[in-house]
Length: 143
Image (spheres, rainbow, N blue to C red):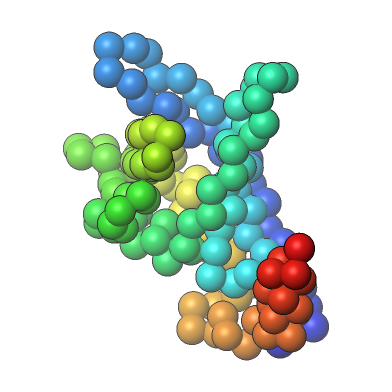
Protein backbone atom coordinates (compact mmCIF):
# COMPACT_ATOMS: atom_id res chain seq x y z
CA UNK A 1 0.00 0.00 0.00
CA UNK A 2 1.14 3.53 -0.64
CA UNK A 3 1.37 6.03 2.17
CA UNK A 4 -0.20 8.92 0.26
CA UNK A 5 -3.91 8.57 0.93
CA UNK A 6 -6.06 10.54 -1.53
CA UNK A 7 -9.72 11.53 -1.39
CA UNK A 8 -11.36 13.26 -4.35
CA UNK A 9 -14.80 14.82 -4.06
CA UNK A 10 -17.04 16.48 -6.57
CA UNK A 11 -20.57 17.81 -6.39
CA UNK A 12 -22.73 17.00 -9.37
CA UNK A 13 -26.34 17.31 -10.40
CA UNK A 14 -28.05 14.19 -11.69
CA UNK A 15 -31.43 14.78 -13.30
CA UNK A 16 -33.99 12.18 -12.26
CA UNK A 17 -35.93 11.32 -15.40
CA UNK A 18 -39.54 10.19 -15.12
CA UNK A 19 -42.20 9.56 -17.72
CA UNK A 20 -44.72 12.37 -18.10
CA UNK A 21 -42.86 14.65 -15.68
CA UNK A 22 -40.13 17.25 -15.82
CA UNK A 23 -36.62 16.13 -14.89
CA UNK A 24 -35.96 16.62 -11.19
CA UNK A 25 -32.41 17.72 -10.27
CA UNK A 26 -30.76 15.73 -7.49
CA UNK A 27 -27.51 16.83 -5.86
CA UNK A 28 -24.97 14.02 -5.78
CA UNK A 29 -21.63 13.98 -4.03
CA UNK A 30 -19.14 11.83 -5.91
CA UNK A 31 -16.32 10.58 -3.71
CA UNK A 32 -13.21 8.58 -4.57
CA UNK A 33 -10.94 7.23 -1.84
CA UNK A 34 -7.60 5.62 -2.65
CA UNK A 35 -8.17 3.17 0.24
CA UNK A 36 -11.03 1.75 -1.89
CA UNK A 37 -9.34 2.23 -5.28
CA UNK A 38 -11.82 0.36 -7.47
CA UNK A 39 -14.92 2.24 -6.27
CA UNK A 40 -16.69 5.56 -6.65
CA UNK A 41 -19.20 6.39 -3.92
CA UNK A 42 -22.21 8.48 -4.95
CA UNK A 43 -24.30 10.04 -2.19
CA UNK A 44 -27.69 11.11 -3.54
CA UNK A 45 -28.91 14.00 -1.40
CA UNK A 46 -32.65 13.63 -1.07
CA UNK A 47 -33.13 17.15 0.25
CA UNK A 48 -35.79 15.86 2.61
CA UNK A 49 -35.39 16.24 6.34
CA UNK A 50 -37.44 13.09 6.96
CA UNK A 51 -35.31 10.89 4.68
CA UNK A 52 -31.67 9.90 4.77
CA UNK A 53 -29.33 10.44 1.86
CA UNK A 54 -28.90 7.39 -0.36
CA UNK A 55 -25.44 6.02 -1.13
CA UNK A 56 -24.56 3.78 -4.05
CA UNK A 57 -21.11 2.36 -4.74
CA UNK A 58 -20.06 2.05 -8.37
CA UNK A 59 -17.06 0.43 -9.99
CA UNK A 60 -14.84 3.24 -11.22
CA UNK A 61 -14.33 1.39 -14.50
CA UNK A 62 -18.11 1.14 -14.98
CA UNK A 63 -18.40 4.93 -15.05
CA UNK A 64 -15.40 5.23 -17.36
CA UNK A 65 -16.72 2.60 -19.76
CA UNK A 66 -20.24 4.06 -19.61
CA UNK A 67 -18.98 7.39 -20.92
CA UNK A 68 -18.10 5.65 -24.18
CA UNK A 69 -20.59 2.81 -24.58
CA UNK A 70 -23.33 0.98 -22.69
CA UNK A 71 -21.80 -0.67 -19.65
CA UNK A 72 -23.04 -2.70 -16.73
CA UNK A 73 -25.52 -5.45 -16.15
CA UNK A 74 -28.10 -6.09 -13.51
CA UNK A 75 -28.74 -3.30 -11.01
CA UNK A 76 -26.48 -0.64 -12.53
CA UNK A 77 -26.14 0.46 -16.14
CA UNK A 78 -24.29 3.48 -17.50
CA UNK A 79 -24.42 4.69 -21.11
CA UNK A 80 -24.06 7.75 -23.30
CA UNK A 81 -27.44 9.40 -23.90
CA UNK A 82 -28.81 8.70 -27.36
CA UNK A 83 -28.04 11.63 -29.63
CA UNK A 84 -26.33 13.72 -26.93
CA UNK A 85 -22.58 13.13 -26.45
CA UNK A 86 -22.49 15.61 -23.54
CA UNK A 87 -24.89 13.55 -21.43
CA UNK A 88 -24.53 10.18 -19.75
CA UNK A 89 -27.40 8.13 -18.34
CA UNK A 90 -27.22 6.10 -15.14
CA UNK A 91 -29.91 3.51 -14.56
CA UNK A 92 -30.34 2.03 -11.08
CA UNK A 93 -32.56 -0.87 -10.06
CA UNK A 94 -33.16 -2.34 -6.63
CA UNK A 95 -35.89 -4.32 -4.92
CA UNK A 96 -37.36 -1.01 -3.75
CA UNK A 97 -37.53 0.66 -7.16
CA UNK A 98 -35.99 1.86 -10.40
CA UNK A 99 -34.48 5.22 -11.33
CA UNK A 100 -33.01 6.72 -14.47
CA UNK A 101 -30.67 9.71 -14.14
CA UNK A 102 -28.83 11.85 -16.66
CA UNK A 103 -25.81 14.00 -15.95
CA UNK A 104 -23.03 15.92 -17.66
CA UNK A 105 -20.59 13.58 -19.39
CA UNK A 106 -17.75 16.18 -19.37
CA UNK A 107 -18.16 16.78 -15.62
CA UNK A 108 -18.17 13.05 -14.87
CA UNK A 109 -15.15 12.59 -17.14
CA UNK A 110 -13.31 15.40 -15.32
CA UNK A 111 -13.97 13.74 -11.96
CA UNK A 112 -12.79 10.37 -13.28
CA UNK A 113 -9.68 11.94 -14.82
CA UNK A 114 -8.74 13.28 -11.38
CA UNK A 115 -9.18 9.78 -9.88
CA UNK A 116 -7.03 8.25 -12.62
CA UNK A 117 -4.31 10.84 -11.99
CA UNK A 118 -4.32 9.95 -8.30
CA UNK A 119 -4.49 6.17 -8.81
CA UNK A 120 -3.65 5.17 -12.39
CA UNK A 121 -5.58 2.28 -13.93
CA UNK A 122 -3.80 -0.99 -13.25
CA UNK A 123 -2.15 0.27 -10.06
CA UNK A 124 -5.20 -0.15 -7.80
CA UNK A 125 -3.84 -3.24 -6.04
CA UNK A 126 -0.81 -1.27 -4.84
CA UNK A 127 -3.22 1.01 -2.95
CA UNK A 128 -5.14 -1.72 -1.15
CA UNK A 129 -4.49 -2.18 2.56
CA UNK A 130 -5.29 -5.87 2.90
CA UNK A 131 -4.65 -5.87 6.65
CA UNK A 132 -7.20 -3.08 7.15
CA UNK A 133 -9.71 -4.78 4.84
CA UNK A 134 -9.33 -8.07 6.74
CA UNK A 135 -9.70 -6.25 10.06
CA UNK A 136 -12.89 -4.55 8.82
CA UNK A 137 -14.28 -7.85 7.56
CA UNK A 138 -13.56 -9.67 10.82
CA UNK A 139 -14.97 -6.87 12.98
CA UNK A 140 -18.19 -6.71 10.94
CA UNK A 141 -18.64 -10.48 11.26
CA UNK A 142 -18.16 -10.28 15.03
CA UNK A 143 -20.92 -7.69 15.47
